[in-house]
Image (cartoon, rainbow, N blue to C red; front, side, top):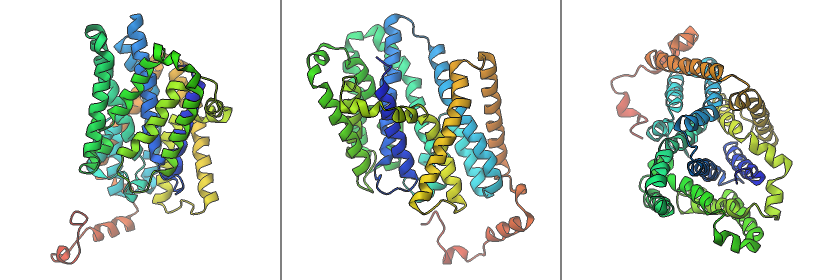
Amino acid sequence: MFLRTEIDGLRAISVLGVIFYHAGFSSISGGFAGVDVFFVISGYLIGGQILKELAAGQFSFRSFYGRRARRILPALMVVTLVSALIGYFILLPHDYRYFFGSAFTSLLSLSNFWFMDQIDYFNPQAALDPLVHTWSLGVEEQFYLIAPILLGVTWFRFRRFLVFSLAFLMLASLGLMLALSSSAPMFTFYMLPTRAWELFAGILVAIAIGKPWWVVCKKWHGQLSMLGLLVLLFGILFTPSGVAWPGSWAIIPVAGTLLVLLFGQSNSVARTVLSLAAMRALGVISYSAYLWHQPIFSFLEYQQKMPASFSGRLAVVLLVFGVAALSWRLIEQPFRTGKLTQAWGWGVMIVMAAMIVAMSIGGHVTKGFPSRMPQELSNFLDLVQTTGPYNKRCILSRRDV
């Protein structure tokens, strides 16, 4: 049920949408919807795996959270540490201190709370933030802190109400998202309650596959999967700029993804396209590509070195995928496949986590390690931060604006 080649193709479309959107390709107006697609896929794969193990009597909380940690944390911590090293040489103290706030909260899977309080994802200044994209990891990991308990209790105590319960929670989350998308855009974008419907939808697809109705309409699977792919591409390519997100427009790429997951196993043009070797290769390294693209883009933007030309930006995108391929081979795989012994793997992760925590505390206490700055720059920054008694009467502060 879960070894499906076309899912790698879905991942490829998702990460390409996000990366090309962040790279500034205006034709990918809804590229950020790639994150919504990831949520649906994750719900299908991880939620479905939980239910499969519950049915077989093999589910273990320790094993589940261990797999999630080995999947998410090693690459995330390496990206954070490399970003911290680069930031040491180029970020101003205020920005470096801010960076460690996001680094610390991303380690705890809470960076969505941090960014909700700090910056609008669609604010141009967010492009300068190396870790702003980690908000989605926070949402996902918070969901999987709750999901095993929810699914386990429902499975053993109220099994016949499982589908009804998940459908109710999905619709409640969807309704909350639609209700708050305009009045509370920051909460709606960053928080789990308004994102959970996408993950619940993926779990419901995992349950639906194999049911009688699914087999009866099998002759339509090819056409429905192709329809799903077209709907998904429409959502990524033609979502209007400035639309409230997530809002009603988010239903389009999510619906397309659900159709592909439901019917994509049958022979069709959609399955052929999504199962192409190039698509599968991009899908396999999609997590590393997602992690590395934002630091690379943001540091280039911070130094005003991001190419303005189409070819230049495309070259940077290719660089991202090159780094991602190395990250997948040298970081993701050893931790996930056991090439590192369990003791060594956990030991390395603990050391990296301790380094991030120590640097985050130091960055906060020292206000961004200002002593690393040349004396001339420190003197200039001290002068800039010194204001006269009438300054606020003449110049609006950031808070006032």
